[in-house]
Length: 251
Image (cartoon, rainbow, N blue to C red):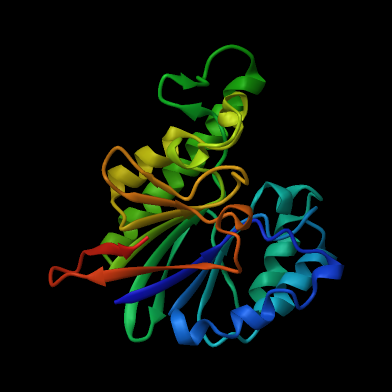
């Protein structure tokens, strides 16, 4: 059994220092791994990311993160990524990492992702260059996620998790205005997850959405934006099968 704690959209600033640390310090009692699904800051400044880094530094469980759109707002994604990494966080963007969780190898593939919409209501690579680049940005993220998941499949992982900020499915956007769905995620991320395979997909970004969803291929998707889960983190248990694959028991 692997216990995965996850939260996104914590949007920390200087005045929120210490807000989540007491809850995070309880993680060894309930989880083997902490996933941070982006929008860790309000405006993506180094000062705000310093706050986040102090919240998660030296935790007794591994921490894996992706950035969100807010974390890019100040135009310093490399610097804020560096701050997290100095605090011991594994930060992913189009990459995968194998994490040792209580003696079990767990693969996490991560990317921020981007928008574009969902099947039947999505943008296409057509028309003005800016529109083409919008869709290509999402496609590059999805392609990198797919490649990272495929690579993890060959690295003897007991479970594989896709970690994004933007949503791969419309299910977990229920509650958001339909007009903004194209800016909350893309079906290309779900296609990548289904093509490469995963045991769980975790995202944030949709503050007014819902927690539970599923890709067309049957991969469970969870929206862990803090305004949705309304707690410091949620815990999902992955029960390992003898074949090495896994299933979500509590989700």
